[in-house]
Each structure stands twice: as C-alpha cells, then as structure tokens.
Length: 553
Image (cartoon, rainbow, N blue to C red; front, top):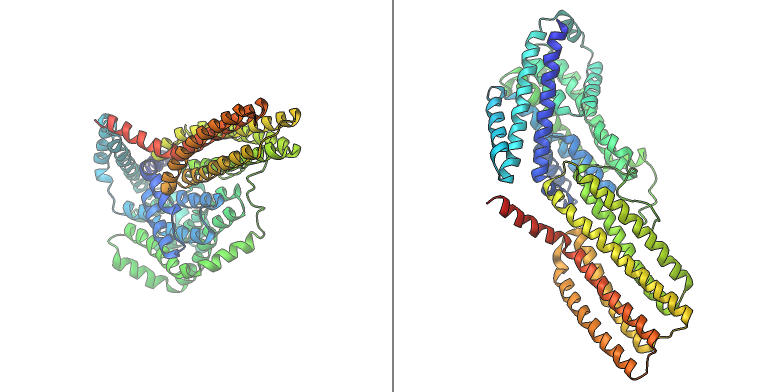
C-alpha cells in the first residue's frame, strides 16, 4: 500500500523538479546574460539591489541560482559584499513566486501548456519562439507533476502510518529542523513549500505547524550558496554567510512572533486567503517580505558579522603568479552563469602579462639587461600555460547549457586567447633581438632609440584601450583604437623609410638595421593583435545578428 502510494508521489516530484529546472534553465538561456548584466551594473543602493534580486529570482525561479551567482560575482570581484547583501535579501522574496503560482492550482490546464510548448519547440524554426516554447513546456511539466503529487496525497491521507507520522509533528523546533533538512537535500525552498502546500490542501498537516516548517525551509535554502562559497575566496564565503545569517536571524524573530501570536497570524492568513494552500503561499511571501523589511536596514551589521565569522583578508589576486589560474579551474567557484565572465577575467589577466612583457622586452633591447631578457622568456612560458588552460576551459564550458549570449561569445574568446598569445610571442622575438644585439655588440643610434620609443608609446596606449574594451564590453574608446591603429601603420611605414635612409647614408650598420626593422614591424603586428581584442566581442555580436537573420527568414 505504502509503495503504491509513494511511487506516484515520487514520480510526480520528479516531473515537478524537472519542469522547474527546464523552465528556469530556458529562461536563463534566453535572458540569463542580460539579467546578469543588470546585476553586474548594480549600484551601491541596497534598495535597488534588493529589487533586482526579487526580479532576477522571480524570473529564473530559483533563489539558490541567484545566490550562487552573486557568490560567484563576489569571488570574481565584480560585486562588493554590501552590493551582494541587497541582492541576496531580494532573492528571498523572489523565491516565493513559485509557491504563489502553485497555490492557484493550474494543473487542469497543464496539458495545454505542455502540448503548445512541445509543438512550437518541434516545428518552429525561429530561435526566439523555440526558447519561449521551452519555457512553456517546463511550465506544463511542472504542473503535470504537481497534479500527480496532489492525487497521490489524496490517497495518502487514508494511510494510517502517514497520518500518525504527520500527526506526531507537533514540536515547532523539530518542524523547523525537518524543513531545513528537506530543503537542503532538495536544494530548493520553492519545491519544499510547494509540497507542504499540497499536504495542507489535502489535510495531511495543520496550518500552525506548517508555518514552522516554512521557517526551516528558509534556512535549508542556504545550502547551495554555502557549498559554492567553500571553493571561493574569503569574500565569497562571506557572501554565502550573508544568506545564512539573514535566514537564521529572520527565523529566530519569526519563531518568537509565531510563539506569541500564532492565533492572530492564522486569522490574518484566513482573511486574505481563499483556501489552506493559498494560506501557505501567502505565509511564505509575507514572512519573507517582513524579514527583508526588518533586516534591510541592518545589512551593514550582517556584513560585519560575516567578517567576524570569516576573519582576515585574502592575499589578493597577483596576475603575475606563475603557472596558476586565478579565476577558473578546480580551486575556484564554478557556475555556468558566470563561466564566460570568469574566462574573460582570466584573459584580461593574461593580456596584462603580455602587455607588461612587451615593455620588458623593449627595455631589455635598449639596456641589454640579462635578467630582463630571461624574465621575458619565463613570462612567455606562463602566457603559453594560460593560453593552453583557458582554451581547454572554453572547450569544456562550450558543452554546457550556457546563456545564449555567452555561447555566442565563446567563439570570440578562442580568438582573443590566440591574439594575446601572439603578443607574447612578439615580446619573445624582441628578447631574441636583445640577446643577438648583446652577443654581436650591435649599437643603435639615438634616433633609432627615440623612434622605437615613440612607436612603443602608441602601441601601449592601444593595448590599454583594447584591454578595457574587451574586459568591460564598453566601446567608449573604440574610435581611439581605430585611430591609433591607423596611425601606428602609418608610423611603421614612416620609420621603415627613415631606416632605409640611414642605411643609405651609412649611419646604421646592416645588423642594427635588421634588428630595428624586425622590432618596429613586430610592434605594428602587436597593435594588430591588440585591435583584434577590442573588436572580438563586437564582431561576434554582428555575426550573431547576421546568423539570426538568416535562420529566421
């Protein structure tokens, strides 16, 4: 009897979880990059951050996904703890949207959503329509699972062992523990509250004890962020703790309020709800809104508490660290939603190394400093290591279910890694020239040194603009890059002509002339590769638009 009741229940739960995952993943694929972009540009205003947290979580149907994303942002340095606190508090409200939807019992029209979603997904060639169809399909599967769970629970109330077990759940503290453990296992407070809602509708559990289970669900929902924070730096751990401290604090004062005012709260819920299920959904929302309203002014205190729990500071990211990944790899937080963001940060670090190395090589060419020459070769090995590891990482994440806009960027990032590696190669070429000059005793005229310095200054300016454009996706300096690239091409031709004139006047030896010509030609190519960095993302966007136009015809 128990097995025949539990199997349909478990099957319904599976459909519910899959539908929720499909709907959330489809929304994240369709608009995840745009939603993430909003979070990246968040202001320090905690109220705005809270509202964005509500919207983001309501959209992707998962406070766990939102908080893990925020923890990843903090780990990458894209968001401060004070900014993260507001978003995390907002996520706690946004997660109640699912239970509100469930409470309206749309199970009867679930097959309509399912067939509409499947048909459009199978037969439409328009990518936008297919993305929306996947969301609709997930919605249908979710409510189909909900319907099956509800049917199973209607039979379950006649099973003596189930009735006796649930009837014994009278201790409020134990109810909180049950809610915490179940939610930590399922990794979603929305799912746990939805199941609780169905049980209340079937009369399996009473309203008063259910309110304590909801409080436990709030604490259990912190499990995903806490697991993500383990692999992160100290600020990432603190961000995860903000979520935990907030929910524990909120649970404590709600427990006190329920203990002394249970009758009044139940009366309020009955007054604003049409049925027991709606009472649970409304309780979930009201608890969260009340908690946020009380604790939002205390975000500064919550952040300070996390500093007490996780004392000290990280050593900080050293982009010069040899043969180590700083933002990607097994020792840092991995989240599909921030996978491309982390790759861009690692590429930015690689570009800084290459930029520094070209200047080190040019300095060694003039000073003939042996340590600088050897350092150029060592840094080049590090750049090659990063190129290999980043490329492997991009191959790996390209196979994941990433937001559509992120998938578009991956192709461009392969080219970016290659361009940065080529800049590193040119630095090595200059070091080779410095070594040759030292061995052969070749000298440069003051004019030649000045001209190489002028060209290097122009190339440095272009590289800095290019790195900024690539890493921030802000094309404010795109015109400067185009202008500098054109001037560098012209300057290189001009210097080659002057070099020939010096040779003709016997003011320069053939050996010095060869090195000079190779160096300025190499600097011009460095400028070309840097220009590619600036245009990489924009060109991929233009190509994506062209492909969409072809596909949608």
